[in-house]
Image 1 (cartoon, rainbow, N blue to C red):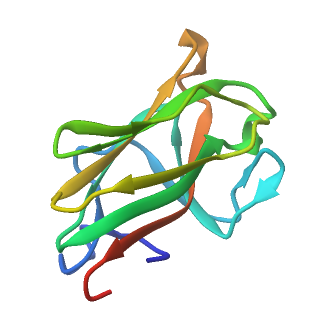
Image 2 (image 1 turned 45 degrees about the vertical axis):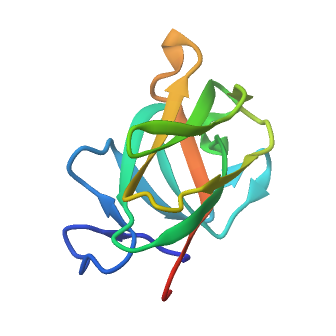
Length: 141
């Protein structure tokens, strides 16, 4: 899956980003992390949470997580993936200009996942964080 639909416009038959209960999201083409440009991604504040309703049986969430190069190399964050209230994955602290961290999480049997970015410094809450090349492998799609 290359593109997440937003639930206001989606048909609830596949993964959709839930606008209510999610933080600010900027869906982008060509975000850059650590000098590498990716085809697509979502940029969020580094103190944020984004919920994705799976709406069908899915097996794996994959992405590359890091600090968006538009930050000028400033800031640092830790990323985590939650599903149905349980943390399934957590990154080390990722600094600005670091390469993106690969994310691969088994979401079998889960109904929703939540992508969390946490600023690792109090002054870094508005640093842009990226979930790039996100893919959710699901049955029938």
